[in-house]
Length: 291
Length: 291
Image (cartoon, rainbow over all chains, first blue to last red):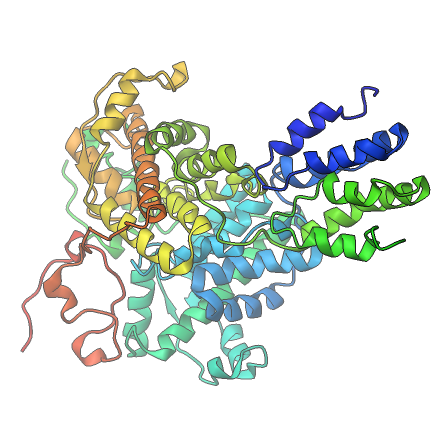
């Protein structure tokens, strides 16, 4: 066999090293027993190597390809996805599945259930908003490091300042042609700004504004619409990136007077204990500056 | 084709029915063993494309298979991974790559870079701790919904109450045979409890206890050791699950007196605005109960 042809030995090693439990050796022996040599060579040369290389051995090169998506399709899809497996899954699935429909492989290789844990800010702990977590994962799957850093930062800053649910999501929910009967809702829900990336703060602020409990159906539906809004915004940013016209437009909500001293740094004497870029006054009260 | 020869259609059905998606020469070998050359050529010519298509159509069945891992190997690997691409990637990559080494496919199909965005609590926002985010994603990849809910809740509650870095991570870092020179450190770092899932709180508490700034090399190294500790704990829980002896042992840190009123519910009159299971007193001060 020439250099380009897999040797039988190498073929067996390569195929048997794949922990699929699918044994090839016996079949190959069967082949070698009665087929002419040139047929064996041809089969071995053309098939397994390609298949092994393409399918099993290598992680599909990251970042995965992105083609522009329709943010409105994704907004509806993510709202629907919220009712499939909650916020984090809903946002991640909507974007990845839309790409799966448009591109196919490699999006056919990732189980979107992977991100379901982010629901309710990490299995209901009410930490990081799941919709934001899931959308950020999708952005990171399809962009290089320089890009996902910028896009995710913009998305997070936008999230803390945007009144959820959007008018668009409220309108879609009224049309509700994409929702199954069980989840149809013709209520326009009141909007609120979270001032935080946290599920806990985002939900509480909305509940206070709407006068509805966190365990109400409306609060759940509000989070479904928010999931749509966050996924749509992620797609909007990705489309800007695809068109080479992305620009960060939302400033960090961290209070300027606070971060003058309290920031990431090495000097503990001036209070550089702090890491973070969120709105300080959500949790902290201002104090007099010691001079 | 005669009875003994797989039709192209049946070949595709058979190959696509392999849950692993790995199609080797074997099925083809059965087909080609004694078939005329022209048939073999025809099939061989057509196979790779079809196989890739068939394989690519289906997402490798979730949850992906788990085999018990050595938590100590993963602890070192995640610490090392922290220096590859920060905390969230470090924890996720350490577990997935350890499974990739042991099992191969389908772990060869997922780009672990996907989780890098969680660094520093979502691109440095200091929201949810990235190590916890990444480890939770790995747990969710390999367990069904009932299981990942329990395991991730246990991991999150444990996280808020565990003094990071562990003695083990401190010791490993001293041995530092697995770290590249640049990151070697023989310092035993002081440990602190976060009382929160948040990067912001976790880092600040550690900085206050150590007297070191959040921008110091030691703080970064502390987060590397923490990444190892969180990934190792995730593996410990997964191993317990694999051995069918997992039991949640860490209580939610939410303050009992608070959640008596402030909890998820529909009745806003008694303050059921709140969603969350973290330690309330990290951010809130207790108030007198109105009767």
